[in-house]
Image (cartoon, rainbow, N blue to C red; front, side, top):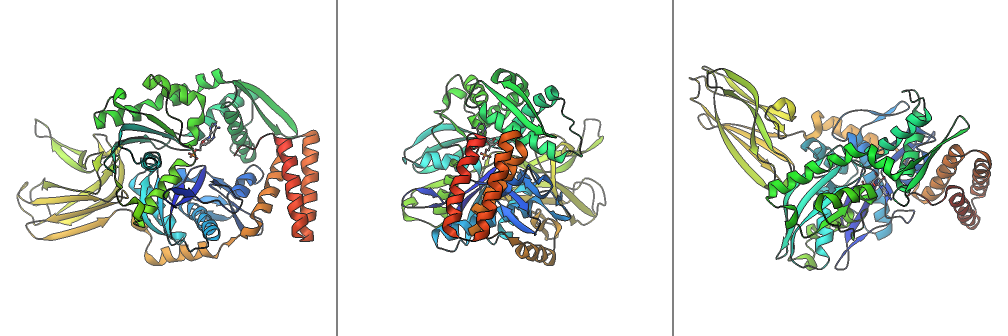
Length: 564
Ligand code: AMP
């Protein structure tokens, strides 16, 4: 079975092509959303999902969330003495989704389509693909998140649609795509985005207000406090989606600290972030040569578009109300499910095709001479311009710059800036040339970008027939043996038994409540925890189920409505 996976910063979801429509697959707790969170217990068991998320405020140094922001880097994420990369943690989330889907569907999941932010760089895409492989999945294709959302939105009635804009603000990234549907072809006209803008940044705004008012001592040694502030900021921000003001409160050193934040105060403090939403929208419209009034709809996706201040900003930007009919948390996974159906060549999708674009420019560094003949190095020569339709292959011919030059080296870059220093370096390639006069030897540099957004560069010297092929970032410097070692290490981790996931999640939640409240509520959380642990020890399934329902109800009462 091929599945479609939305590997989100905050939550992930998995779907497949069902009977004429995509369908989400629930996890072992019966939820469609699985928090992208991993926690390691004292016994060395790995917890993924809700249980891990709930452990975050109690065990911040053994729990990780939002690691998608670090994917594509080798930055270690430490759990005590055990270290992981973001890629490995993502693999654990994917593994858990795969296991849940296999259990639910009673079928092996062999392959997956995984979504990535449109603005993900080549390095981040390759790392995502490797995460899938580490999880034992064959990654059929990577699909841009707003494209997936557009698929979910556009496929519903199979009608042609004039260009519409997908505005996707998730937990950590912001993407914009302009999409058109004509004769079964879903065509992405342009994509743009900001890799470092999402709900988490808005949490920091709330945290900033609270820190100042409550004079919180946020040093680097205060991991627990930082985590509590983050969780409280998230609660406050979500509450501000429902009301005009909300209370930020945390318990620190047995003291309840709280402050009231109004929607207006939040909006004012978040103004710089709201401003940053404009640029990608403008760029996508400019690149597709379509004005705001040519958009038939502005479709909101991504959980963070639930924030009224974001909706207001969008309404102001387009002078009309956006379309909020697609489920912001489900659309991307559903679109990935459509893509999974396309990969399975399902008959009911036979007439549908999808074309996507490369959201950024790719090229090499060159030297140029100015009018006086002085050489300037480090300039960016795009070979594939942004918003080129994929798959694409383009060649650019260069000539040698110096007399008797013996080799040519190209740095490979992604970005839009004039100087390569301001762009992202993806790799480099070197090739030997016969020493001749400057400008005599030609070098052809070809960039090939596939539908998943993965780059290959090949360089040839026609005069000698010399050829070099580089697949950028594959393995990220790891050789086959190292990659195998990492895979084995990950496979050897003890995953907490799935049939106990619900128990574990409830314990983590009760522990979190115990830490977050004082007084009666804390005492009650403690009693509930003790009660539940006692019943678990009896191993009587009926008693456990009853205790679970009771403890869940009581925790709901302590906390108010659950925020996931
Ligand atoms: P996604 O990456 O699409 O799953 O989006 C997750 C982001 O949506 C997180 O930053 C959440 O805080 C945010 N989010 C979800 N629900 C709400 C809500 N009701 N109000 C504000 N933000 C929300």
